[in-house]
Image (cartoon, rainbow, N blue to C red):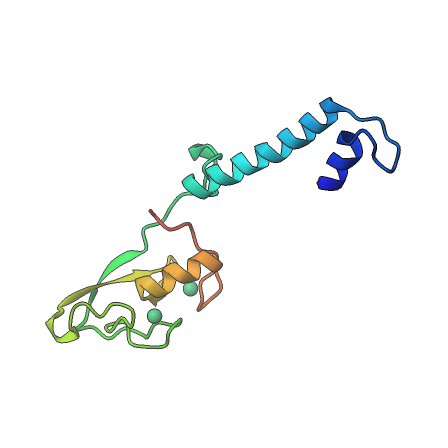
Length: 136
Ligand SMILES: [Zn+2]
Ligand SMILES: [Zn+2]
């Protein structure tokens, strides 16, 4: 970036190119526009420019887990679904119902595990089928 600005902005550049204020203004405003777009995406999310009608349908993964039934373990952290390793606020013996997340392909995960997984990959960790976006 600075090389181009030097070539077209410095009156005595070593390539001997004629300085052009218009070129420098267009060149710098292009970078400024990119910075503004990145800032808006950082503040409002990466998909904030896409109209809602073009976005894929969001899916509610949350289900209530009845701990008296026997569920498979969470395939991400390999611990029981009844105990959430990242949620130690409520002791397990006091819980009757607990929230877990179930994918459309009927696989169960801890909410904290699946949320961090979805941030990296939109595929089911167990069967690799496509996952819809998480309902915010
Ligand atoms: Zn887990
Ligand atoms: Zn699956």
